[in-house]
Image (tube, rainbow, N blue to C red; front, top):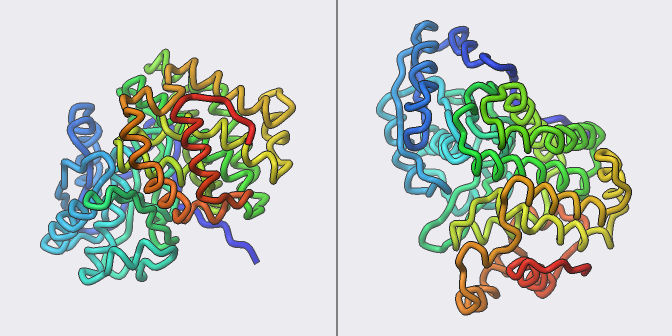
Length: 383
């Protein structure tokens, strides 16, 4: 038997943030990042709508990019003192992922972070609170996934915490919240959504629902990402990209991902490379690598009027260029010496990443190193 895992309630359209005023509860902690949600007015609007619902609010601000386990512990302590029955993640994926882990430590103060890095090891939630996810970026799909990516600063490793317990109870997918998103963030996150669609479609888990969502999301990204980058005030394009992000997230929540994400997690943790940017660098060569093990890429290529796996890889490279993203890892200022010094470390971590287990072709550490080196230099390689 298969089961479709999805956010319990999905509210999607421009202006849907207002639906917060219909939430039933007593107290809510809103978790957000730096200042963008406050500057845009989205934070104050969320507080106002929750207050209309009779819900007392407290805000935890300052979640950093690539949130650390330490930040999650700090937020959980705030929650334990306030005792909310709702936790609201408002902002980019970092804020929402951190809020998910704060939720875990709020309900289970003694939970072992290292233990939870093993797939499906998060303890049972919803004993004290439920979760609302309100994304401000169109990429990760975290508003409907059982996934939180948390960074161990000491080890320089990103850990994808995987459990359907983390799937939000309510997702609010409001394109208006994205209107102030900078062009480079729109580009990076949109390419992340694209990667989710591709990897979910070719994963070693076959799921008809995930397949339809992956194809639909890919089509929307190719039709709308350039417009969202070039004309940020186009709310229709913003909403379309927000919907594509959700669709990609829902697809991979049920079919999971592959080695593009395994590779990206490592360079993000060690070098601070934006996740969507590194995904877009790795994706074309991973398509070429995986094409040796699956015949599904031509089906995706046909969605955008192409025919072969190579056509799809080239289309990704073209879109990447059109939205002004980097074509190689070295463009982020990483020296050859620094790269060579860390290559074995990141390749072994990528091999151990949970996403590797869902890739259609089983890689070796040496093959991952080959992909890394090609993408460091921006080389096109058929593996």
